[in-house]
Length: 541
Image (cartoon, rainbow, N blue to C red; front, side, top):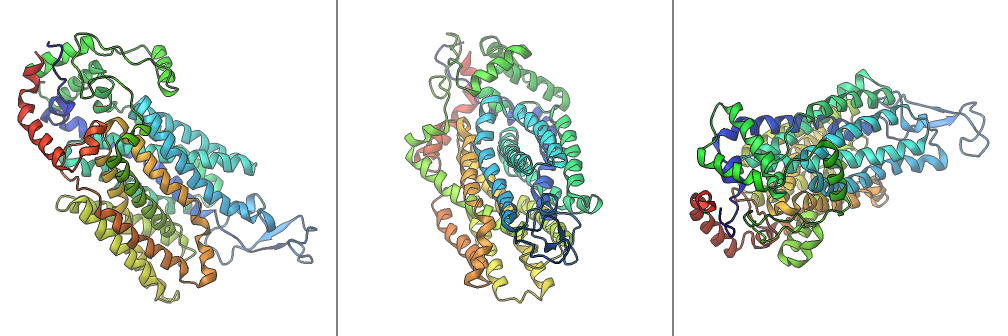
């Protein structure tokens, strides 16, 4: 093996080969199904986080004059029998904690976007997903049994962070595991699962009307998802970037057996050679120590064997999202992508938790929103085969903005018409959410992919912390919040114009490739790689 020869990409050795197809489908399906509880957790506050009319128990005192110590809550105008407000007596000055609960949700999403992406890059996609599923199970149970408001708020923030981190990691896992041609399908499947889970929260809340019982029941589902996640193999592309070739070879053998095919002889010979000189698989205890060092950046760079071919970087540096500052084009694109995340986060959650704003029955509204999201995910899978990311993003932004604007001119008494419009808007926004994950995953290089997704997503979550207070714009007129949502959608269209199309393109692996993506230099490089890929394996020997 030549000392200066390049390592062939994992795509041509494995992920783009026919013997990987069944394994890819199985891994993507299991990874997506294991996230089903996250959508139920996310939408669950619709059934317990709201303001309930209350009065002093004896009806002889002002409920907020300081002398009342026992309050009664009137649920006659509401669709649910219990609430966070009643359980913790969030009355008078403490009512602010209800809105704080919503803000902590977005704070958790922000932290999860950053921390989850970082841990996924350091520990591996599959490993971090299993850890997050298990921790979510524990946190959900604690929230369901604790009598402390502050413990509940703290656990809710952590749970939100972990739910977000599962989505960042699962999106990267599916994008890296599937074939380039069907990358949108792998991410779309994940989104369809999430949409279905949002709709499942409505019947689950009907069966468990007490919010504590509801959270515990979701935790049971989360534990089942944790068990399922243990059967997921690690992302081959991530293992390849870590030079753990032996583990990739084991996955390849498993995949070939599942497909009832044989690994090509030249590929198998190459993998055996790489397995001997790459990073060797460690014992469980040693792996824990190594993971700890990786997370806290205590690990010395892997010392390359003299026999090991050089990678695309020419070195083994561990890159982080901070290195993007040296690549201005890529950095600007990340900012524009972040604006898309801010927009879809604001419009999506403003609609998802909008049952009270649109004067709708919460059970019907959540159920129809979940169904609309499922349609949007499936519809998106179909459209992504015929149109590019940029075209679809602009179209979705125009449609969602128009739907919000239409609600300005429709009286709230026309509940069915508003329900149809919000149903249509949710279809568009669900599809737009898929585009944000997919477009960001396409444009961010492998070495910082989940960190890039996490950072862009976190920008949306930071602004989302103010979302519970958007309703206060109604002091300028009842239509002000809707106009705000609509204007935001139309503004982000401008950002879409400056981003490159990525449909059907090879994923960038290095920061240099990410910076040059969509330029003439990138196109020439892709043409050169296509001419040399057929000879890549031979050049290694």
